[in-house]
Length: 176
Image (cartoon, rainbow, N blue to C red; front, side, top):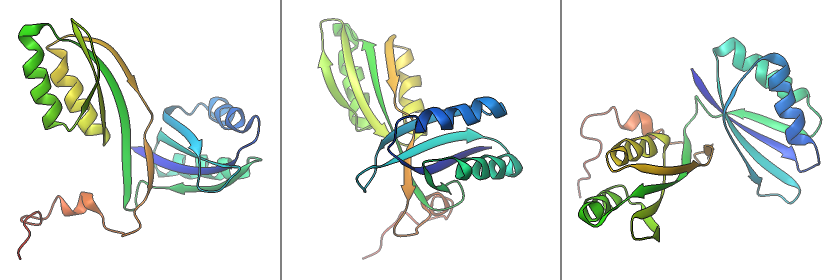
């Protein structure tokens, strides 16, 4: 099972190295990692996706909390959260395919960020499933290059579990 952890760390030299070292020593793999400044000066938010059962996740969390510079660890996997990734994708786009690609760009609410004679570079932001779907559709045109960020995530302030809402029939209909 994939788990998303949000880790607040002091923005100190070597903090990321200690976290990566912990995973390497224990034989755990990090599927995705994104780090950036948090809401407080001197504190960074690290979002990581790790695979493992509940026992493994508990072990990882306890080990992270013991590390110097780690302030808190929150498992976002079981609580309502917002998750996003960014992908840049360069696609072959000769004149005869360009309009079809541009139509897909609109459907996925992506942006064209670079245009060349034979290629388009697209930017798309969304949940990981959206990025995978666009990537699969672009394969038929010829993907030249892809760059993806790791997942970033935070707890939903509203507490609304949108994944649960998707399973309720008729919930997406609004009556006035």
